[in-house]
Image (cartoon, rainbow, N blue to C red; front, side, top):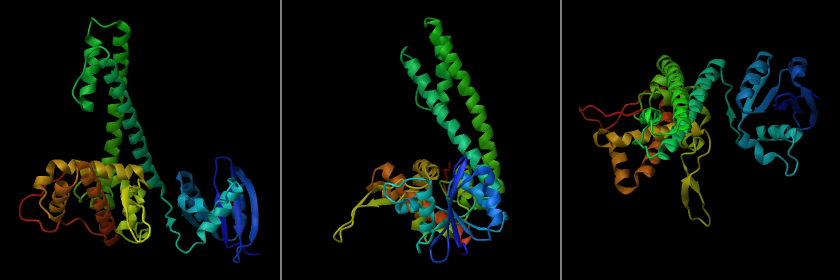
Amino acid sequence: MTITMIGLDTAKAVFQVHAVDKAGNVVIRRKIQRKDLITFFEKQEATTVVMEACGASHHWGRTLAVLGHDVKLIAPEAVKPFVKKGKKNDAADAAAICTAAHQAEVKFVPVKTMEQQAILAVHTARALLVKQQTMLANAVRSLASEFGLTVPKGIGNVEGLAEQVEEEKSLPEEARQVAKELKGRLSELVVHIGTLETKIVRHARNDARARRLATIPGIGPITASLIAATVADFSVFKNARQFAAWLGLVPRQHSTAGKTRLGRITKAGNSEIRRLLVLGATAMLKVAGQWNSVAGAWFRGVLERRPARLATVALANKTARIIWALMTHNEVYRPSGRSAQPQARAAV
């Protein structure tokens, strides 16, 4: 029997293969050691190989494509409904991947290039270091407050606070030493974060897609670089709303009996892009009064009717839809309704 599709459940050491023919009959169901995986696919005729999208699946997608196979990546949430209840194991996962891939409405994730994954690694490292920086800053503030020392909000004030604790002769030596250690760690993180951000900015300037994204108000080099590296093909989204929904920026629906009730945003999909879009929208609050375009007027109107946080999330949703339109039509942002006055900008 001819194999038409192989569902591959990836892992660190043991992979599960579930191969079916045109009629959906199971041809192969077996476990394969990592060292034997390439040999197995070299012996197979060119066919469709489907995997759940994850970091490692892009590597295997590129590897198997070189062998002549048609590799497709599918979102894990699209596979989950087809895993038989009470049978969560590698074999069931591989079978569910095949079943999900046969659905008419299924959407596949493009395989990323090594260059895309490399810049995403830089973004991941930066996000991790920024998180550690926040943790250290909170630790310094907590330590200092125990001895009655405080400073205004802002990450830039924390190192100075640590110096206050370190130089306060009336404090115990142990507390002063801890403050010195934390300040040293913070200084190192600032340097490392700056190095990574330099690489990200360089990518944003050299990548044509990122440069187009950076023309949108509220989007700076970090956000533009991350979106360009993450979304290889915007055409996988049927419309702008689907892209916004993928980012979790659309409201939850609780509808029944013809009554539509909308709740908070779903927060599904890529959390880092969503976070940066909301931060960029929050930055636009400072220049909303001088934002001279139809979008600016719309944003000011939302601010008059809704709290600032709801307005910034709404703007992030609108920005996501603008991103989809620009990238699918290969254009740059051109504000409509703009007069001759200069336009205010804020970006992340």
